[in-house]
Length: 256
Image 1: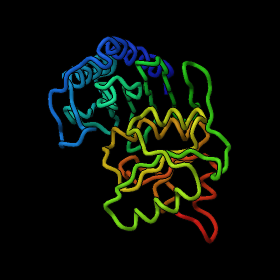
Image 2: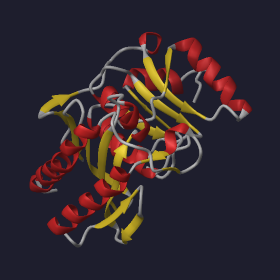
Image 3: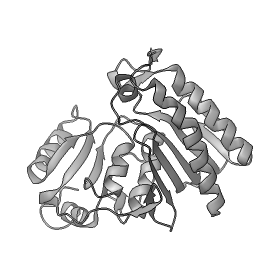
Image 4: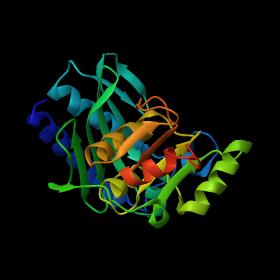
């Protein structure tokens, strides 16, 4: 893959993301997709997606595009999967866990990812086979064992078996109730926390695909629950460091 493509995507996401900072904590909600507090939308979600689509298409019109706000615009085996403002509810409230996220999916595989926290100016990038970087510097997942781990968990606790699994996991590590934002993947990739686990979560493809490559390229392991492989369209997964993965999946007390 051309490094020029990654450089262009980084330029685009910063160019579009930086102007959002003046609205941080100072923007009105225009509607709510589900009635849940996390599913609010502002005019900037739509405007940002349109800008990203326009600029990415101008660079290479052969690559398709699918975004959270307007869905698929151009069908292709190779396409951009975009969340223009991930963590909109945080953005509205002035909480610095909001990002713009872009993943390039090629024949079902995430091959490039950029996540930009436009508030803190942290830019995470990953390319298949090329590692993960934060603001140009290589980063790596931690090597902490499960007992010393902080793990963000997104789980549907309306399902009885999930409640028991959540309870067992909480007894083995520090469980963080997910902040529902791509920024968490950056925290895992840079070794600040040890993982992110999703169990029947409420998100969509664009919520998870960009972060998956950050973690795998930073030396972490991301697999769908009960499998040894990862498909970004399957939202049940472990995205953790190697030590935690082994403890969670091996031996008689394995939780997954």
